[in-house]
Image (cartoon, rainbow, N blue to C red):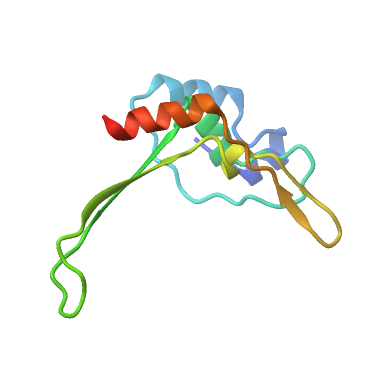
Amino acid sequence: MEIGYEVFKKVGASVPDEVLSKIKETQACLYGATTTPVGVPNYTSAAVTLRKALDLYANVRPVKSYPVPCLQSNVDLVIVRENTDGLYSGLECETENSAFALRVITRRASERIARFAFK
């Protein structure tokens, strides 16, 4: 299935409804790189669209060190980041000389990601 800017230019949505419906019917989705242009009216990033539509709120990044001389060893941690609030809210605008992104932090998202991380 195709999503992204090229699809938006054809049908007016980065993730068409029929594609989103098919993704929801599956157990997994492999997402490749997509173009996210700046300043295109009515364009919403395919990544942000999928995160919101599928409620993909937890970005989990495990980190583990390997033995390397002169470097800190025994690092074994997991970084958990909220993936729908913050700068991922998709609320952005551009002027001739500036670009702005509104960082939204909600109690609901903050508490949900904290619970996820502690579990």
